[in-house]
Length: 571
Image (cartoon, one colour):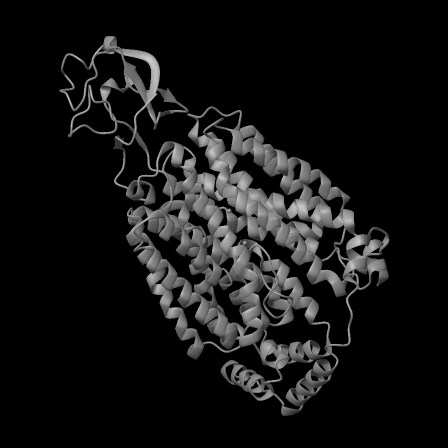
Protein backbone atom coordinates (compact mmCIF):
# COMPACT_ATOMS: atom_id res chain seq x y z
CA UNK A 1 0.00 0.00 0.00
CA UNK A 2 -7.57 -1.09 -2.78
CA UNK A 3 -15.00 -0.66 -7.20
CA UNK A 4 -18.45 -1.56 -7.77
CA UNK A 5 -21.98 -0.29 -7.71
CA UNK A 6 -23.87 -1.26 -4.62
CA UNK A 7 -24.96 -4.81 -5.18
CA UNK A 8 -24.10 -5.03 -8.85
CA UNK A 9 -20.44 -4.41 -9.38
CA UNK A 10 -19.54 -0.89 -10.38
CA UNK A 11 -18.77 1.28 -7.35
CA UNK A 12 -15.44 3.02 -7.88
CA UNK A 13 -13.33 2.42 -4.81
CA UNK A 14 -9.73 1.68 -4.05
CA UNK A 15 -9.58 -2.04 -4.77
CA UNK A 16 -6.84 -2.86 -2.32
CA UNK A 17 -8.97 -2.51 0.80
CA UNK A 18 -12.57 -2.33 -0.29
CA UNK A 19 -13.81 -5.30 1.72
CA UNK A 20 -15.95 -3.75 4.38
CA UNK A 21 -17.46 -1.13 2.10
CA UNK A 22 -19.03 -3.86 0.03
CA UNK A 23 -19.96 -5.86 3.11
CA UNK A 24 -21.95 -2.83 4.19
CA UNK A 25 -23.43 -2.44 0.72
CA UNK A 26 -24.40 -6.09 0.61
CA UNK A 27 -25.78 -5.97 4.13
CA UNK A 28 -27.76 -2.82 3.33
CA UNK A 29 -29.21 -4.52 0.28
CA UNK A 30 -30.56 -7.15 2.63
CA UNK A 31 -33.14 -4.58 3.66
CA UNK A 32 -35.21 -5.05 0.50
CA UNK A 33 -37.96 -7.64 0.02
CA UNK A 34 -35.96 -9.67 -2.46
CA UNK A 35 -32.91 -9.80 -0.26
CA UNK A 36 -34.90 -10.64 2.85
CA UNK A 37 -36.20 -13.66 0.99
CA UNK A 38 -32.76 -14.51 -0.37
CA UNK A 39 -31.11 -14.12 3.02
CA UNK A 40 -33.74 -16.39 4.53
CA UNK A 41 -32.89 -19.00 1.89
CA UNK A 42 -29.17 -18.61 2.59
CA UNK A 43 -29.80 -19.22 6.29
CA UNK A 44 -31.80 -22.32 5.46
CA UNK A 45 -29.31 -23.88 3.02
CA UNK A 46 -26.26 -22.96 5.13
CA UNK A 47 -24.65 -19.56 5.55
CA UNK A 48 -21.15 -20.84 4.92
CA UNK A 49 -21.46 -24.47 3.97
CA UNK A 50 -19.43 -26.71 1.71
CA UNK A 51 -20.78 -25.05 -1.44
CA UNK A 52 -19.79 -21.57 -0.29
CA UNK A 53 -16.38 -22.71 0.92
CA UNK A 54 -15.51 -24.27 -2.46
CA UNK A 55 -16.43 -21.13 -4.38
CA UNK A 56 -14.87 -18.88 -1.75
CA UNK A 57 -11.52 -20.65 -2.15
CA UNK A 58 -11.75 -20.32 -5.93
CA UNK A 59 -12.44 -16.59 -5.62
CA UNK A 60 -9.35 -16.08 -3.46
CA UNK A 61 -7.27 -16.90 -6.55
CA UNK A 62 -8.13 -13.70 -8.51
CA UNK A 63 -7.51 -11.73 -5.30
CA UNK A 64 -3.93 -13.01 -5.29
CA UNK A 65 -3.51 -12.27 -8.99
CA UNK A 66 -4.92 -8.78 -8.54
CA UNK A 67 -2.24 -8.08 -5.93
CA UNK A 68 0.40 -9.22 -8.44
CA UNK A 69 -1.01 -7.15 -11.27
CA UNK A 70 -1.64 -3.92 -9.39
CA UNK A 71 1.79 -3.48 -7.83
CA UNK A 72 4.28 -5.65 -9.77
CA UNK A 73 5.83 -2.45 -11.13
CA UNK A 74 7.53 -2.05 -7.73
CA UNK A 75 10.00 -4.65 -8.99
CA UNK A 76 9.75 -4.53 -12.78
CA UNK A 77 10.19 -0.74 -12.94
CA UNK A 78 12.44 -0.22 -9.95
CA UNK A 79 15.85 1.38 -9.82
CA UNK A 80 18.82 -0.90 -9.26
CA UNK A 81 21.69 -0.19 -6.89
CA UNK A 82 24.62 1.15 -8.88
CA UNK A 83 27.51 3.57 -8.77
CA UNK A 84 29.57 5.44 -11.30
CA UNK A 85 32.44 3.70 -12.99
CA UNK A 86 35.77 5.32 -12.09
CA UNK A 87 38.03 4.95 -15.17
CA UNK A 88 41.19 5.62 -13.14
CA UNK A 89 40.46 2.74 -10.78
CA UNK A 90 37.83 0.36 -12.21
CA UNK A 91 38.71 -2.62 -14.35
CA UNK A 92 36.41 -5.06 -16.17
CA UNK A 93 36.68 -7.42 -13.18
CA UNK A 94 36.01 -4.84 -10.43
CA UNK A 95 32.79 -4.98 -8.45
CA UNK A 96 30.38 -2.55 -6.79
CA UNK A 97 32.28 -2.42 -3.48
CA UNK A 98 35.96 -1.53 -3.71
CA UNK A 99 38.50 -0.23 -1.17
CA UNK A 100 39.15 3.01 -3.03
CA UNK A 101 35.50 4.20 -3.17
CA UNK A 102 36.03 6.49 -0.19
CA UNK A 103 37.95 9.03 -2.26
CA UNK A 104 36.33 8.41 -5.66
CA UNK A 105 32.55 8.27 -4.98
CA UNK A 106 30.53 10.59 -2.66
CA UNK A 107 28.82 8.79 0.24
CA UNK A 108 25.43 10.08 1.33
CA UNK A 109 22.28 8.71 2.95
CA UNK A 110 24.20 5.59 4.01
CA UNK A 111 24.99 4.62 0.41
CA UNK A 112 27.37 5.39 -2.43
CA UNK A 113 26.09 8.11 -4.73
CA UNK A 114 24.51 6.45 -7.75
CA UNK A 115 25.03 9.24 -10.25
CA UNK A 116 28.13 11.21 -9.25
CA UNK A 117 31.84 10.64 -8.72
CA UNK A 118 34.69 12.88 -7.64
CA UNK A 119 36.42 14.72 -10.45
CA UNK A 120 40.13 14.08 -11.08
CA UNK A 121 42.67 16.85 -10.83
CA UNK A 122 44.75 15.72 -13.77
CA UNK A 123 45.35 18.12 -16.63
CA UNK A 124 44.79 15.46 -19.25
CA UNK A 125 41.66 13.36 -19.44
CA UNK A 126 42.15 9.67 -18.79
CA UNK A 127 39.98 7.37 -20.80
CA UNK A 128 39.52 3.64 -20.67
CA UNK A 129 40.35 1.37 -17.78
CA UNK A 130 43.60 1.51 -15.86
CA UNK A 131 45.09 -0.81 -13.32
CA UNK A 132 43.51 -0.07 -9.91
CA UNK A 133 46.98 -0.39 -8.37
CA UNK A 134 48.38 2.03 -10.93
CA UNK A 135 49.62 5.52 -10.46
CA UNK A 136 46.31 7.34 -11.04
CA UNK A 137 44.11 5.44 -8.50
CA UNK A 138 45.34 7.44 -5.53
CA UNK A 139 43.49 9.92 -3.33
CA UNK A 140 45.81 12.76 -4.33
CA UNK A 141 44.53 12.61 -7.90
CA UNK A 142 40.88 13.26 -6.90
CA UNK A 143 39.19 16.47 -5.84
CA UNK A 144 36.17 17.06 -3.57
CA UNK A 145 34.16 18.32 -6.54
CA UNK A 146 31.59 15.85 -7.84
CA UNK A 147 30.66 15.29 -11.48
CA UNK A 148 28.09 13.21 -13.33
CA UNK A 149 29.21 10.05 -15.01
CA UNK A 150 26.93 9.50 -18.02
CA UNK A 151 25.71 5.92 -18.42
CA UNK A 152 28.78 3.98 -17.28
CA UNK A 153 27.93 2.13 -14.05
CA UNK A 154 28.88 -0.75 -11.79
CA UNK A 155 25.93 -2.69 -10.36
CA UNK A 156 25.69 -4.31 -6.95
CA UNK A 157 23.20 -7.06 -7.81
CA UNK A 158 22.22 -9.24 -10.75
CA UNK A 159 18.71 -7.75 -10.77
CA UNK A 160 17.38 -6.73 -14.19
CA UNK A 161 14.55 -4.20 -14.52
CA UNK A 162 13.41 -1.88 -17.28
CA UNK A 163 15.89 0.58 -15.79
CA UNK A 164 18.86 -1.56 -16.84
CA UNK A 165 17.22 -2.78 -20.03
CA UNK A 166 16.15 0.60 -21.40
CA UNK A 167 18.91 2.71 -19.81
CA UNK A 168 16.74 4.69 -17.37
CA UNK A 169 19.02 6.16 -14.70
CA UNK A 170 19.59 9.25 -12.57
CA UNK A 171 17.82 12.30 -14.04
CA UNK A 172 15.53 9.99 -16.04
CA UNK A 173 14.28 8.02 -13.03
CA UNK A 174 10.99 9.93 -13.12
CA UNK A 175 10.15 7.62 -16.01
CA UNK A 176 10.21 4.68 -13.59
CA UNK A 177 7.86 6.45 -11.16
CA UNK A 178 5.58 7.30 -14.08
CA UNK A 179 4.92 3.57 -14.54
CA UNK A 180 3.17 3.48 -11.17
CA UNK A 181 1.12 6.56 -11.98
CA UNK A 182 0.04 5.11 -15.33
CA UNK A 183 -0.85 1.87 -13.54
CA UNK A 184 -3.21 3.79 -11.24
CA UNK A 185 -4.64 5.82 -14.12
CA UNK A 186 -5.49 2.46 -15.70
CA UNK A 187 -7.27 1.47 -12.49
CA UNK A 188 -9.12 4.79 -12.45
CA UNK A 189 -10.44 4.05 -15.94
CA UNK A 190 -10.85 0.31 -15.58
CA UNK A 191 -12.77 0.01 -12.32
CA UNK A 192 -15.93 1.89 -13.42
CA UNK A 193 -15.73 0.30 -16.88
CA UNK A 194 -15.41 -3.13 -15.32
CA UNK A 195 -18.41 -2.40 -13.13
CA UNK A 196 -20.46 -1.43 -16.16
CA UNK A 197 -19.60 -4.60 -18.05
CA UNK A 198 -20.15 -6.70 -14.92
CA UNK A 199 -23.63 -5.18 -14.66
CA UNK A 200 -24.37 -5.93 -18.28
CA UNK A 201 -22.77 -9.33 -18.87
CA UNK A 202 -22.49 -10.83 -15.40
CA UNK A 203 -19.89 -10.92 -12.66
CA UNK A 204 -18.62 -14.40 -13.39
CA UNK A 205 -18.19 -13.52 -17.07
CA UNK A 206 -16.39 -10.30 -16.19
CA UNK A 207 -14.10 -12.07 -13.73
CA UNK A 208 -13.11 -14.75 -16.22
CA UNK A 209 -12.68 -12.48 -19.25
CA UNK A 210 -10.97 -9.62 -17.40
CA UNK A 211 -8.62 -11.96 -15.57
CA UNK A 212 -7.49 -13.76 -18.71
CA UNK A 213 -7.19 -10.54 -20.73
CA UNK A 214 -5.11 -8.95 -17.99
CA UNK A 215 -2.88 -12.01 -18.01
CA UNK A 216 -2.44 -11.61 -21.77
CA UNK A 217 -1.52 -7.93 -21.36
CA UNK A 218 1.10 -8.88 -18.79
CA UNK A 219 2.68 -11.54 -20.97
CA UNK A 220 2.80 -9.12 -23.92
CA UNK A 221 4.36 -6.51 -21.62
CA UNK A 222 7.14 -8.97 -20.81
CA UNK A 223 8.03 -8.84 -24.54
CA UNK A 224 8.32 -5.03 -24.60
CA UNK A 225 11.09 -3.75 -26.85
CA UNK A 226 11.05 -0.19 -25.47
CA UNK A 227 9.76 1.96 -22.63
CA UNK A 228 6.71 3.26 -24.51
CA UNK A 229 5.47 -0.24 -25.29
CA UNK A 230 5.91 -1.24 -21.63
CA UNK A 231 3.93 1.82 -20.49
CA UNK A 232 1.07 1.22 -22.92
CA UNK A 233 0.57 -2.37 -21.79
CA UNK A 234 0.92 -1.38 -18.12
CA UNK A 235 -2.10 0.86 -18.68
CA UNK A 236 -4.05 -1.75 -20.66
CA UNK A 237 -3.31 -4.38 -18.03
CA UNK A 238 -4.97 -2.33 -15.30
CA UNK A 239 -7.72 -1.01 -17.57
CA UNK A 240 -8.98 -4.57 -18.02
CA UNK A 241 -7.74 -6.23 -14.82
CA UNK A 242 -8.45 -3.74 -12.04
CA UNK A 243 -12.00 -5.04 -11.73
CA UNK A 244 -10.78 -8.41 -10.41
CA UNK A 245 -10.83 -7.37 -6.77
CA UNK A 246 -14.33 -5.84 -6.56
CA UNK A 247 -15.89 -8.49 -8.78
CA UNK A 248 -14.36 -11.42 -6.89
CA UNK A 249 -15.21 -9.72 -3.63
CA UNK A 250 -18.91 -9.35 -4.42
CA UNK A 251 -19.19 -12.89 -5.76
CA UNK A 252 -17.59 -14.17 -2.56
CA UNK A 253 -19.90 -12.39 -0.11
CA UNK A 254 -23.18 -12.54 -2.01
CA UNK A 255 -23.74 -16.26 -1.46
CA UNK A 256 -22.68 -16.09 2.19
CA UNK A 257 -25.32 -15.73 4.88
CA UNK A 258 -25.86 -12.31 6.52
CA UNK A 259 -24.11 -13.31 9.76
CA UNK A 260 -20.97 -14.35 7.88
CA UNK A 261 -20.58 -11.42 5.48
CA UNK A 262 -18.27 -9.21 7.53
CA UNK A 263 -15.99 -12.16 8.33
CA UNK A 264 -16.04 -13.26 4.68
CA UNK A 265 -15.24 -9.71 3.55
CA UNK A 266 -12.31 -9.48 5.95
CA UNK A 267 -10.84 -12.88 5.09
CA UNK A 268 -10.96 -12.41 1.32
CA UNK A 269 -9.36 -8.97 1.69
CA UNK A 270 -6.54 -10.63 3.62
CA UNK A 271 -5.73 -12.64 0.50
CA UNK A 272 -4.79 -9.41 -1.26
CA UNK A 273 -2.27 -8.71 1.52
CA UNK A 274 -0.96 -12.26 1.20
CA UNK A 275 -0.64 -11.70 -2.54
CA UNK A 276 1.58 -8.67 -1.92
CA UNK A 277 3.78 -10.70 0.44
CA UNK A 278 4.02 -13.57 -2.06
CA UNK A 279 4.93 -11.08 -4.80
CA UNK A 280 7.95 -10.05 -2.73
CA UNK A 281 9.01 -13.69 -2.45
CA UNK A 282 8.62 -14.39 -6.18
CA UNK A 283 10.53 -11.22 -7.07
CA UNK A 284 13.41 -12.35 -4.87
CA UNK A 285 13.55 -15.66 -6.73
CA UNK A 286 13.13 -14.26 -10.25
CA UNK A 287 15.34 -11.15 -10.52
CA UNK A 288 14.77 -10.58 -14.28
CA UNK A 289 11.73 -8.42 -14.98
CA UNK A 290 10.71 -10.25 -18.15
CA UNK A 291 10.62 -13.67 -16.50
CA UNK A 292 9.02 -12.27 -13.36
CA UNK A 293 6.10 -10.92 -15.42
CA UNK A 294 5.71 -14.31 -17.12
CA UNK A 295 5.71 -16.12 -13.78
CA UNK A 296 3.10 -13.72 -12.38
CA UNK A 297 0.82 -13.49 -15.41
CA UNK A 298 0.97 -16.72 -17.40
CA UNK A 299 -0.92 -18.87 -14.83
CA UNK A 300 -3.65 -16.22 -14.65
CA UNK A 301 -4.79 -17.15 -18.17
CA UNK A 302 -6.50 -20.13 -16.54
CA UNK A 303 -9.05 -17.77 -14.99
CA UNK A 304 -11.03 -18.18 -18.21
CA UNK A 305 -12.08 -21.54 -16.72
CA UNK A 306 -14.26 -19.67 -14.22
CA UNK A 307 -16.84 -19.53 -17.02
CA UNK A 308 -17.43 -23.25 -16.47
CA UNK A 309 -16.54 -23.94 -12.84
CA UNK A 310 -17.90 -20.87 -11.02
CA UNK A 311 -21.61 -20.10 -10.54
CA UNK A 312 -23.00 -16.71 -11.53
CA UNK A 313 -24.12 -14.29 -8.82
CA UNK A 314 -27.68 -15.09 -7.73
CA UNK A 315 -28.37 -11.42 -7.06
CA UNK A 316 -27.21 -10.44 -10.53
CA UNK A 317 -29.32 -13.19 -12.14
CA UNK A 318 -32.36 -11.97 -10.23
CA UNK A 319 -31.67 -8.37 -11.26
CA UNK A 320 -31.69 -9.54 -14.89
CA UNK A 321 -34.89 -11.53 -14.46
CA UNK A 322 -33.05 -14.84 -15.05
CA UNK A 323 -35.22 -16.65 -12.52
CA UNK A 324 -34.59 -20.23 -13.66
CA UNK A 325 -30.79 -19.83 -13.54
CA UNK A 326 -30.97 -18.19 -10.12
CA UNK A 327 -33.17 -20.99 -8.81
CA UNK A 328 -30.79 -23.63 -10.16
CA UNK A 329 -27.82 -22.03 -8.38
CA UNK A 330 -29.71 -22.04 -5.07
CA UNK A 331 -30.84 -25.65 -5.55
CA UNK A 332 -27.27 -26.70 -6.34
CA UNK A 333 -26.01 -24.95 -3.20
CA UNK A 334 -28.66 -26.67 -1.09
CA UNK A 335 -27.81 -30.07 -2.60
CA UNK A 336 -24.05 -29.72 -2.01
CA UNK A 337 -24.63 -28.42 1.53
CA UNK A 338 -27.08 -31.30 2.09
CA UNK A 339 -29.82 -28.96 3.24
CA UNK A 340 -33.52 -28.90 2.22
CA UNK A 341 -34.83 -26.02 0.11
CA UNK A 342 -38.66 -25.81 -0.07
CA UNK A 343 -39.97 -24.80 -3.48
CA UNK A 344 -42.46 -22.43 -1.84
CA UNK A 345 -39.56 -20.35 -0.48
CA UNK A 346 -37.98 -20.18 -3.93
CA UNK A 347 -41.30 -19.05 -5.41
CA UNK A 348 -41.63 -16.35 -2.73
CA UNK A 349 -38.18 -15.08 -3.67
CA UNK A 350 -39.02 -14.98 -7.38
CA UNK A 351 -42.35 -13.27 -6.73
CA UNK A 352 -40.83 -10.52 -4.58
CA UNK A 353 -38.06 -10.10 -7.17
CA UNK A 354 -40.60 -9.51 -9.96
CA UNK A 355 -42.29 -6.86 -7.84
CA UNK A 356 -38.96 -5.18 -7.12
CA UNK A 357 -37.99 -5.13 -10.81
CA UNK A 358 -41.31 -3.54 -11.72
CA UNK A 359 -40.69 -0.75 -9.22
CA UNK A 360 -37.00 -0.30 -10.02
CA UNK A 361 -37.45 2.94 -11.94
CA UNK A 362 -39.85 4.63 -9.53
CA UNK A 363 -37.31 5.96 -7.00
CA UNK A 364 -35.70 9.34 -7.38
CA UNK A 365 -32.42 10.24 -5.68
CA UNK A 366 -32.01 13.83 -4.41
CA UNK A 367 -28.29 13.82 -5.11
CA UNK A 368 -27.87 17.55 -5.74
CA UNK A 369 -29.71 18.41 -2.53
CA UNK A 370 -27.50 15.99 -0.62
CA UNK A 371 -24.29 17.42 -2.11
CA UNK A 372 -25.28 20.93 -0.98
CA UNK A 373 -26.57 19.73 2.38
CA UNK A 374 -23.46 17.66 3.22
CA UNK A 375 -20.84 19.75 1.41
CA UNK A 376 -18.47 19.99 4.40
CA UNK A 377 -18.91 16.32 5.27
CA UNK A 378 -18.25 15.31 1.66
CA UNK A 379 -15.14 17.53 1.46
CA UNK A 380 -13.81 16.00 4.68
CA UNK A 381 -14.61 12.53 3.36
CA UNK A 382 -12.75 13.22 0.09
CA UNK A 383 -9.68 14.48 1.98
CA UNK A 384 -9.73 11.41 4.19
CA UNK A 385 -9.88 9.07 1.20
CA UNK A 386 -7.12 10.98 -0.58
CA UNK A 387 -4.94 10.72 2.53
CA UNK A 388 -5.49 6.99 2.88
CA UNK A 389 -4.82 6.09 -0.74
CA UNK A 390 -1.71 8.29 -0.80
CA UNK A 391 -0.24 6.81 2.39
CA UNK A 392 -1.33 3.20 1.92
CA UNK A 393 0.17 2.85 -1.55
CA UNK A 394 3.01 5.25 -0.79
CA UNK A 395 4.21 3.11 2.10
CA UNK A 396 4.11 -0.04 -0.03
CA UNK A 397 6.20 1.65 -2.72
CA UNK A 398 8.67 3.15 -0.26
CA UNK A 399 9.13 -0.14 1.59
CA UNK A 400 11.68 -1.26 -1.01
CA UNK A 401 13.75 1.86 -0.34
CA UNK A 402 14.24 1.11 3.34
CA UNK A 403 17.58 -0.22 4.50
CA UNK A 404 18.24 -3.95 4.32
CA UNK A 405 16.79 -6.51 1.93
CA UNK A 406 14.07 -4.87 -0.16
CA UNK A 407 12.32 -8.19 -0.84
CA UNK A 408 12.06 -8.98 2.86
CA UNK A 409 10.81 -5.46 3.56
CA UNK A 410 8.12 -5.78 0.91
CA UNK A 411 7.00 -9.16 2.25
CA UNK A 412 6.76 -7.70 5.77
CA UNK A 413 4.76 -4.82 4.28
CA UNK A 414 2.24 -7.39 3.04
CA UNK A 415 2.10 -9.49 6.19
CA UNK A 416 1.66 -6.51 8.54
CA UNK A 417 -1.56 -5.64 6.75
CA UNK A 418 -3.23 -8.79 8.08
CA UNK A 419 -3.49 -7.65 11.73
CA UNK A 420 -4.37 -4.21 10.38
CA UNK A 421 -7.37 -5.73 8.60
CA UNK A 422 -8.47 -7.72 11.65
CA UNK A 423 -8.01 -5.01 14.28
CA UNK A 424 -11.09 -2.94 13.24
CA UNK A 425 -13.34 -5.89 14.06
CA UNK A 426 -12.17 -5.58 17.66
CA UNK A 427 -12.00 -1.83 18.22
CA UNK A 428 -14.74 -0.29 16.07
CA UNK A 429 -17.69 -1.27 18.25
CA UNK A 430 -15.81 -0.86 21.53
CA UNK A 431 -14.19 2.53 20.87
CA UNK A 432 -16.51 3.84 18.15
CA UNK A 433 -15.90 4.51 14.45
CA UNK A 434 -14.78 8.10 14.80
CA UNK A 435 -12.26 7.67 17.62
CA UNK A 436 -10.90 4.44 16.14
CA UNK A 437 -10.33 6.17 12.81
CA UNK A 438 -8.72 9.22 14.40
CA UNK A 439 -6.46 7.20 16.72
CA UNK A 440 -5.26 4.94 13.90
CA UNK A 441 -4.41 7.87 11.65
CA UNK A 442 -2.62 9.75 14.45
CA UNK A 443 -0.60 6.62 15.28
CA UNK A 444 0.46 6.46 11.63
CA UNK A 445 1.39 10.17 11.72
CA UNK A 446 3.46 9.68 14.88
CA UNK A 447 5.34 6.73 13.37
CA UNK A 448 6.06 8.58 10.14
CA UNK A 449 7.19 11.69 12.00
CA UNK A 450 9.35 9.68 14.39
CA UNK A 451 11.03 7.85 11.50
CA UNK A 452 12.38 11.19 10.29
CA UNK A 453 14.29 11.44 13.58
CA UNK A 454 15.82 7.97 13.26
CA UNK A 455 19.32 7.92 11.71
CA UNK A 456 19.42 6.42 8.21
CA UNK A 457 21.79 3.67 9.34
CA UNK A 458 19.39 2.52 12.09
CA UNK A 459 17.59 0.05 9.84
CA UNK A 460 15.84 -1.86 12.62
CA UNK A 461 14.34 1.31 14.07
CA UNK A 462 13.23 2.63 10.68
CA UNK A 463 11.66 -0.70 9.73
CA UNK A 464 9.82 -1.02 13.06
CA UNK A 465 8.28 2.45 12.78
CA UNK A 466 7.42 1.80 9.14
CA UNK A 467 5.59 -1.45 9.93
CA UNK A 468 3.64 0.07 12.83
CA UNK A 469 2.65 2.97 10.57
CA UNK A 470 1.57 0.57 7.84
CA UNK A 471 -0.50 -1.45 10.30
CA UNK A 472 -2.16 1.73 11.58
CA UNK A 473 -3.09 3.11 8.14
CA UNK A 474 -4.38 -0.32 7.03
CA UNK A 475 -6.55 -0.44 10.16
CA UNK A 476 -7.88 3.08 9.59
CA UNK A 477 -8.58 2.35 5.91
CA UNK A 478 -10.79 -0.58 6.88
CA UNK A 479 -12.61 1.60 9.40
CA UNK A 480 -12.98 4.32 6.75
CA UNK A 481 -14.92 1.97 4.46
CA UNK A 482 -17.33 1.13 7.24
CA UNK A 483 -17.58 4.69 8.48
CA UNK A 484 -18.17 6.54 5.21
CA UNK A 485 -20.86 4.05 4.22
CA UNK A 486 -22.74 4.94 7.41
CA UNK A 487 -22.68 8.77 7.45
CA UNK A 488 -24.81 9.35 4.33
CA UNK A 489 -28.52 8.59 3.77
CA UNK A 490 -29.58 5.41 2.00
CA UNK A 491 -30.78 6.81 -1.33
CA UNK A 492 -27.52 8.70 -2.00
CA UNK A 493 -25.13 6.58 0.05
CA UNK A 494 -23.55 4.69 -2.82
CA UNK A 495 -23.20 7.80 -5.00
CA UNK A 496 -21.53 9.90 -2.31
CA UNK A 497 -19.28 7.05 -1.21
CA UNK A 498 -18.28 6.59 -4.85
CA UNK A 499 -17.53 10.31 -5.11
CA UNK A 500 -15.26 10.21 -2.05
CA UNK A 501 -13.38 7.13 -3.24
CA UNK A 502 -13.06 8.51 -6.77
CA UNK A 503 -11.42 11.68 -5.45
CA UNK A 504 -9.29 9.48 -3.22
CA UNK A 505 -7.94 7.69 -6.28
CA UNK A 506 -5.96 10.86 -7.05
CA UNK A 507 -3.85 10.02 -4.01
CA UNK A 508 -2.91 6.63 -5.45
CA UNK A 509 -1.92 8.32 -8.73
CA UNK A 510 0.44 10.65 -6.87
CA UNK A 511 1.83 7.98 -4.52
CA UNK A 512 4.29 6.51 -7.09
CA UNK A 513 5.96 9.91 -7.29
CA UNK A 514 6.71 10.10 -3.55
CA UNK A 515 9.96 8.07 -3.70
CA UNK A 516 11.39 10.84 -5.93
CA UNK A 517 11.08 13.26 -3.00
CA UNK A 518 13.79 11.33 -1.17
CA UNK A 519 16.29 12.58 -3.73
CA UNK A 520 15.86 16.08 -2.34
CA UNK A 521 15.51 15.12 1.32
CA UNK A 522 15.72 11.53 2.50
CA UNK A 523 12.82 11.86 4.94
CA UNK A 524 10.55 13.90 2.67
CA UNK A 525 8.09 11.01 1.96
CA UNK A 526 7.66 10.27 5.67
CA UNK A 527 7.10 13.94 6.49
CA UNK A 528 4.52 14.21 3.71
CA UNK A 529 2.65 11.15 4.97
CA UNK A 530 2.82 12.35 8.58
CA UNK A 531 1.44 15.78 7.64
CA UNK A 532 -1.56 14.44 5.77
CA UNK A 533 -2.30 11.78 8.42
CA UNK A 534 -2.10 14.36 11.20
CA UNK A 535 -4.36 16.94 9.55
CA UNK A 536 -6.90 14.47 8.21
CA UNK A 537 -6.82 12.46 11.43
CA UNK A 538 -7.92 15.42 13.53
CA UNK A 539 -10.54 16.40 10.94
CA UNK A 540 -12.20 12.98 11.27
CA UNK A 541 -13.44 14.15 14.67
CA UNK A 542 -15.83 16.41 12.75
CA UNK A 543 -17.69 13.33 11.48
CA UNK A 544 -20.73 12.16 13.47
CA UNK A 545 -20.40 8.93 15.44
CA UNK A 546 -22.29 6.03 13.85
CA UNK A 547 -21.35 3.10 16.06
CA UNK A 548 -24.38 1.01 17.08
CA UNK A 549 -26.81 3.43 15.42
CA UNK A 550 -29.41 2.66 12.79
CA UNK A 551 -28.23 3.53 9.28
CA UNK A 552 -29.78 6.87 8.23
CA UNK A 553 -32.49 6.59 5.60
CA UNK A 554 -33.22 10.26 4.95
CA UNK A 555 -31.09 13.38 4.64
CA UNK A 556 -32.52 14.63 7.94
CA UNK A 557 -31.59 11.41 9.76
CA UNK A 558 -28.03 11.63 8.41
CA UNK A 559 -27.83 15.26 9.53
CA UNK A 560 -28.96 14.38 13.04
CA UNK A 561 -26.67 11.38 13.56
CA UNK A 562 -24.95 13.03 16.52
CA UNK A 563 -28.31 13.29 18.28
CA UNK A 564 -29.51 9.84 17.20
CA UNK A 565 -30.03 7.33 19.96
CA UNK A 566 -28.10 4.11 20.03
CA UNK A 567 -29.89 0.89 19.26
CA UNK A 568 -29.40 -0.39 22.80
CA UNK A 569 -31.03 2.73 24.23
CA UNK A 570 -34.04 2.34 21.97
CA UNK A 571 -34.45 -1.27 22.94
